[in-house]
Image: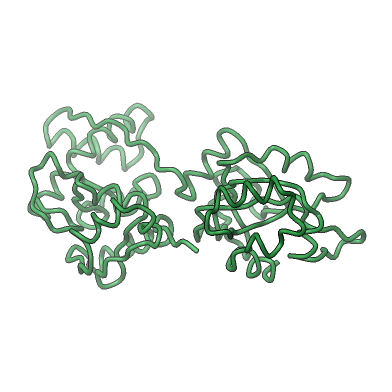
Length: 319
C-alpha cells in the first residue's frame, strides 16, 4: 500500500494520461473539478462477498476520509468525485494478494489532503473500542462518531461557547479550585464559564495588550484569550497553566489563522505558514502584511509543548 500511496497520493494522477480508460463523463467532471488536469486518487476493493460495495456507494462529495497505518491516523482528505473503473485501478495499482485477486476499482478523487498525527489510542477512547482494537479494512462512520473523528483530527473547528462573567475574582478562583479537585457536573459547567475571564485577565497582565502573533497593540475588545493547545484536549493541570497554555490573539485575522491551522509557531518562535494559505489571496495578503518572517517572542521553552501540540494536530501540512 505504500507504493500505492506514493503513486497516486504523493504524486498526482494526470487525467489525460489515462483518457483511454476514463469514461468521457468522468473525465469531463475531473477536468471541471481540477482545472490543472491532475488529482490525488484512491480506491477500495470490493472485498469478500462484496462487503465494501455497499459501504463505498454511500460516499458523497464533501465526505472526509482518514488514512491509518503504523498505529496512527496520518492523512486526511475530502472526497470530490467517486466512480467505478476496474481497468484504471488495475493500471494504477495492480491487484491485491487475496486468494481471488481484486483491484481497487471503487475509486474516488481527493482534495484538501493534509497530514495529521492522531494515535490509535485517541481513536479507541473516542469510539469506545477495546484496548487493542485497530482500524481494519474500509469503514464508514456516521453521526456522533463521524463528528467526533472530525473534531479529533481538527477537520472542522468547534464553535466556542459563549463567555459569561459571574461573581468576583476571588469567587471564580475558589470555584475553579473545586472544579479541578473533582466537581459535580453542575459545578463543572459553571467553572468553564468563569474560567475564560480569568484566563484572559492573566494573559492581558503578561501580554500587555498586544497580539502574541502579529505584535500589534490593540483595544481589549479586539483581543481574545486563545488556547495554544485546544482547551478540550488539555489536562486539568494544563488548563490551569494560564501563563503558558494560552496567548492573546487578535480578531483582525491572527486568531482565525492560528485556530484553523494556516499558521503555527515553530521551536524557537519561527512563524510557520501553511501552503494552504496561498489558495486565498486575502489570507496571503494578511500574512504578508502582518506576519511574514516574524519571530514570535511569546514562544518559550515552557510553552513549546503546547505549540508542538498545535503543530502536530492543527497546522495544515498539505501535500
